[in-house]
Length: 268
Image (tube, rainbow, N blue to C red; front, side, top):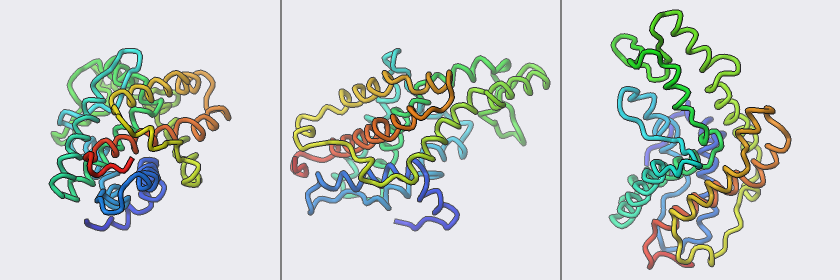
């Protein structure tokens, strides 16, 4: 596995996805047989950042993008289909002893699950964007489409649309600061404080789809993002993030990785 460039090492150390990957891999190790291979935390984190799903958005803005949003009340199946595909690809990579592909799939699987449980991703941001796109054609610079510019039917309308999206109090601005607060909270936390309470009994007869929707419903029922939009960030949101949200994400990542193992590899 290649080493990370120096410019990405800071993000690797403090990024939310990166830390969740490392914590999940350490906790996952307690359920892994000593002689069974699974990508290390370093190998998994390599495929975060610009090598992960977020990098795809920047490198290929004109290509169809995987969804990172799930609307719990709408019985949304789109995101889980991506989770399922990654899990199946991870199974194949492990069976074929392909460590680089296994690390890639493990990282993307963890990324999708993290986004699925992040309350900001339960808000239909894409609907807001579509409403602000007076002109459905993407804004282009040097022939390259800019996916996240809200193009209007006139230059003035384009400016107004983008201010409503990116300006003070805009939908994307609120989304960004919610995730920024989570990053601030998780960075100094000790690994053990992020661990879920999983036993070997929890891993028997594991149904990942059922566990996925139970976790989504559990977090959605807290209405964290709705309360944030109404009241701003509160101390209660900080406590819920530490005690409920982050351990639940780690739990789901660990369950998804465990479900990718063959029956012979499981030690539960």
